[in-house]
Image: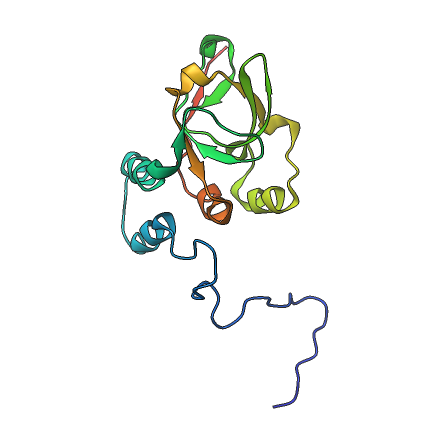
Length: 165
């Protein structure tokens, strides 16, 4: 078969035929990915999805998040009455710390189509940056493996609360 010329409108595929099945692929068979695959074609409530994700990520749970890592957690802001909106179930990359609080980029503040681009480029709009008080997160953060972040970013786990002003 003659080679196909690309017009520039198509994107080259970089996935090999054995993508994700190699025993050398790190965490290619993680409990998280297995759980997500088991959901295909099933109807699951957001509450059940959140609970199951926390169960699968439990081994990586910590009370001391580290800069540069990704976490999922439940959050109850101290000053929620003053906030226009807030996400009860953030998925954040820890960007730094200030006065014991965590500065995190919450991908839920980006529309789903743009999340992967932000994650791949490691560039987040200012609107995603929020400070989190660790005690207000039940002091437990579920670490998300770097390979699972793209999948987790697409999961419908966010729950925004809006204050009417």
